[in-house]
Image (cartoon, rainbow, N blue to C red; front, side, top):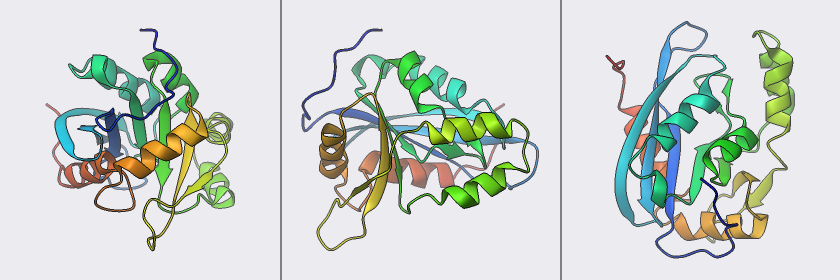
Length: 197
């Protein structure tokens, strides 16, 4: 699906916020991935779910399939990720995700990523260089203050201008310093511990 370049931010812009659920680090198995659809920062529209391998390499395709197979796909305008690593170091290739879904990607973290620590952790995993390449290609880190007096968050953007992404993040962070779609995705994902049948 070809989409026009996103240049303006409507109050009811439809966003899917994505976070991972509980998992035991350094084990084999699967981890829940939850996508929560919001209109702006106020209206909850739905939930989607998939699973990925702990420390695997399937996050990009599983998330892309989850979004494209959702009934919400046609209305979505932005994908928001809780960082670019899920279920340990299952890394999302934001450029590939953008290319597959035709949706801009904004990856948000509460703390500025420590690339030295990440690099060291990757040395213990297969496909080290591929994972590192994806992480380094996720574009520059931009600091965003969503609310006066609150801690800043950090974003990496793909497929959208930084200024537009900043407006989206600020306008949808209605109840905390992170956008509401991500906050609710975290709450739901944290409560899920059962595997898909």
